[in-house]
Structure formats: C-alpha cells, structure tokens
Length: 196
Image 1: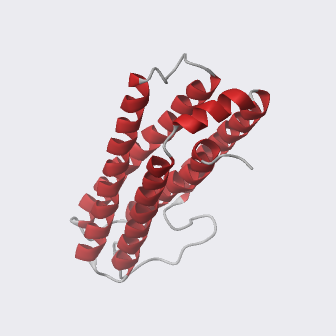
Image 2: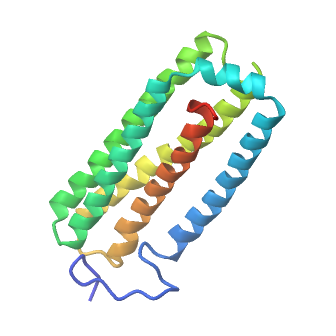
C-alpha cells in the first residue's frame, strides 16, 4: 500500500525523514557554506577597515526584515509538514505555499537591496567587502529560489495523494528550506551586525 500521511513507514537511520538524498544534499550544501563563512571571517580579519565601511552602508532594518521573512517562512513550512503528518492536506498545502510566498518576498526585498547598492556603485569589483557580500548572499539567494520551487512542487504533490513516499515528497523540500534558513542566520551577522 502506498505511504500516505496516515501510513508513514517506520524509518531507519539509513532512511531518515525526507529521504537519504535530501540529507546528503543538505550536508554538502552546509559544508560548502561553512567554507564560505570561514573565508568571509578570514577576509574580514585581513581588511577590517573595508569591511567596517561596507557593513556601515548596509541597512540593519533590511537585514532584520530579511531574517524575519525567512524565520516566519520556516515556521509556516514546519506547520505545513506537521499538518501533513496529522492528515490535514489542505492546511499542509497552505503552510507550504505561505512559506514559499514569504520566500518570494525575501527574493524581492533582496533584489531591491542589490538594486539600491548597485545605484551607489556598491557591487562586484567595488572592493573586497562588496565582492564578498554579493557573491555570498547571491549564492544563498539562488538556494532560496530553488527552495521556493521545491516547496511549490511539494504543495502540488499533496494534491496527488496518496504518494509513494509521502515523507520524502513533503519533508525533503522542507528540509532544504530549513537549510536556507540556517545559512542566512550565519550570513546575517557576518554582514549586517558589526563585530564587538
């Protein structure tokens, strides 16, 4: 019998919720971003004056708004997964789509942030801070766009119940989305919060 939200198979360590492939992808992405974080930290130490000047040009309220968008989005996606597990597909779909919508708002706000700074000649080629900022946050933004796509795909999958492996179809995309949240919680202080 196909696994639906009500007939979840018991999973083993080798087959975690969301499936093995999403966990491998997330582990690889987190390893990649860890290298990015370390590189940013080393670059800041090598040129603290440039980083301090660049950081002062960023808007702390924009950074906070971006963080709150992702935090709220992650909570909505988690509520969607929990609703799915309680066999409430309509609520699950709404949670995933609401999370994706706030992800879209994140993309729009980040795009406006880039546009604002480009108008001030703050972009690639300006200096070490702006190169680092655009590349690191742009890499994250690509992941957010992919995450929005997989969340919409998961919401559409709910319409096709029963699923062959409901946990992988719904939890896998949510796992990827939470990885985007975690990464931003490191990028935000690295760029928007001045070090002590």
